[in-house]
Length: 432
Image 1 (cartoon, rainbow, N blue to C red):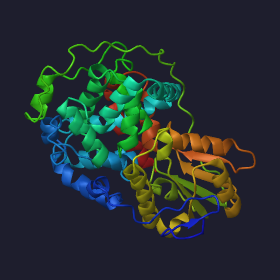
Image 2: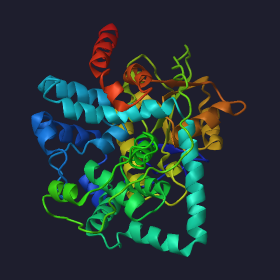
Image 3: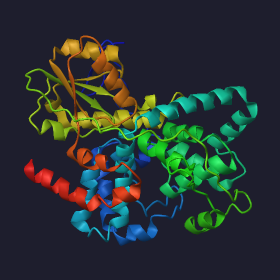
C-alpha cells in the first residue's frame, strides 16, 4: 500500500489508510461523527434534560421521533463528548433533582463499564458462548432461519421488524425499544441472547462491550439472577402511542436463563502515570477520542498512532457505518488537536503494526487513554507484553477512577453514590 493519502495522517508500511470521506449513509447523516455535531446536539437537548426528559424518555415514536431523548450515546461511546462534560453541562442548567432521570441514564454507562472492569471474565464468557451459538447456527438449519429472519426484520412481529430495520439502517435504537427487542428475541423468538447482543454490536453506533453485554444479560435474568424483563403488549402500545400493539404475539412468561455464576469482584487495576521522557508516543483509540486531558497535563508526543478497534467486537462482519463513524471521528480528533499530536499515523490495530510505528518514531514510552474491557484493551495488552516494545502507560480519567470502584453491586447501590461522586470530581478538578 502506498504511503500517505489520509488527511492529517501518514500511513506506515503495516498501517491501514482509509478514505478521508466516509460514505454518508443514513446513520452518518443522522449522527455526523464530529465533536462539533456532538456539542450542537448537547446544546439543543440541554433545555429538555430536566423534568421534560423524565416525562418523555420512555416514548419511542419512530426513527424520526426521538426528540424525548438526547441521542448523545454515539458521541459518548467514542468520547467525542465525555460523561463528565454532559453531567457538568446538565447541572449548570438544572438542579440535580430536576435532572435526576437523565443523570442516572448517563451514569448507567459509567456503571456498566466499572462493573465489567472489575469482572473482565464476563466478557470472555460472552465471547466463548457467542462462538458456540454461531457454531450452532451453522449446524442447525431451523436456528439459522430464525436468526436470519430476526436480523433482517422478517418475523411476524411488526414492531420487532421495525426496530431491526431502524437499527440496521440508522445505527441507533431507542433505549426502551432495545429492552423490548431483547426480550422478544430471547423469550418469544427463543434465540440465544448472545446472538442478539452480537447483532446489536454489529450495528449500533454506541455499542460497547460493557453496556451492551450486561444489558442483554439483565434482560435474560443472568445479570440480576432470576430477574428478567418481559416485553408486554400494553407497555409497547402505550409507549409507542399506539404505533404497535403485538396482541397475542408475545409470550407471557420470561423464565430466567441459566449461566455460570458471576465471578468475584477484582480490584480495579491501578492507573498509570507518564514517566518523564523527551520521546513520548501516543496511541489514540476510538474508546476515547478526547485526548486533551493527557495533553493538557504537559505531555507533548513526538508521534501519535491512531487505531480503531470496533471490528474486534464481533467475529462477523461489522456494519460499514460503525467502522466509518469510528474512523471519521478519529480524523476529526486529529484535525482538532493538530500539531499537539506530533507526527500522526493511522496504524492497524495489531502488535506488529504498533511495534513498527514505535520503532520508526524512536520513542521511549507510549501513553494512551485507559481503554475499558474490550477489543482496544486487548490490542493494547498484546502490544504491551510483546518483546522489545517501549513501556505502555494507560492514563485513566479522574471521572472513571472516582466512579468505577463503586460498581461492585447493583445499579441502585451505585446510584446512591452519585452525589458523593460529584463532590469527589469537583474536588479533583479544583486540585488540578
